[in-house]
Picture 1 (spheres, rainbow over the protein chains, first blue to last red):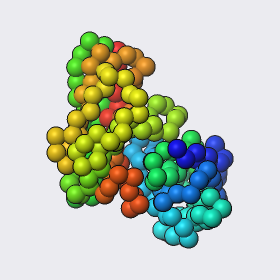
Picture 2: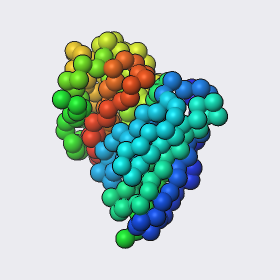
Picture 3: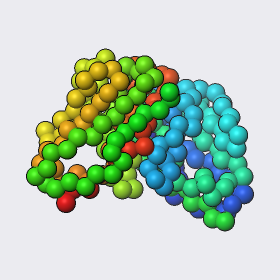
Picture 4: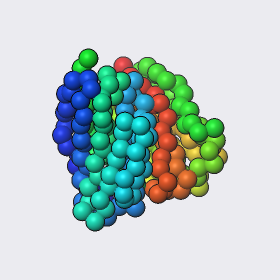
Amino acid sequence: GIQVEQSPPDLILQEGANSTLRCNFSDSVNNLQWFHQNPWGQLINLFYIPSGTKQNGRLSATTVATERYSLLYISSSQTTDSGVYFCAASNDMRFGAGTRLTVKP
Amino acid sequence: DTEVTQTPKHLVMGMTNKKSLKCEQHMGHRAMYWYKQKAKKPPELMFVYSYEKLSINESVPSRFSPECPNSSLLNLHLHALQPEDSALYLCASSQGQFSNYGYTFGSGTRLTVV
């Protein structure tokens, strides 16, 4: 299966700061999905993005399929952004290890 | 309806008990998935059903028995579990198996085996 690697594993930010999370994948993917898992365990779809750039409010994502990576940008972070961010390749829906984000007030 | 509903939200069971987890979706999705997630780990794929047939079993022990009675419903039957099976169990659905159009997850069942 496709190997998915995420970085950094942990990230601590002050409220209002910006951040970039990275997802590398070992082979070409049909699609790539970003999720946010809140402290209660709910996995929330953020983006599915095979290539190009998408934006949704303070969040945006870019996938460069030819170079096998995707980036998730969080701007003006809020405490409610805390949680774990996962990417998953839709070829077989295997998840990366995640980035644990803590936003401090 | 754009949700995947899982019940119960919490379950405590003894090692000799038999229990079932339920997952339901009414989005017309034809693929459904069970994942297991241990604390501080990513979700791990357990089973995939495509058009109500078991498509993938990731070498899951037989004490976990999936069932897909119809296209909207997915069950996970549990029997003789071990304490190490305690985890968050997540259900997901998609238009087709490993769809290009994204996945929707339920909120999970938090299982504790005592």
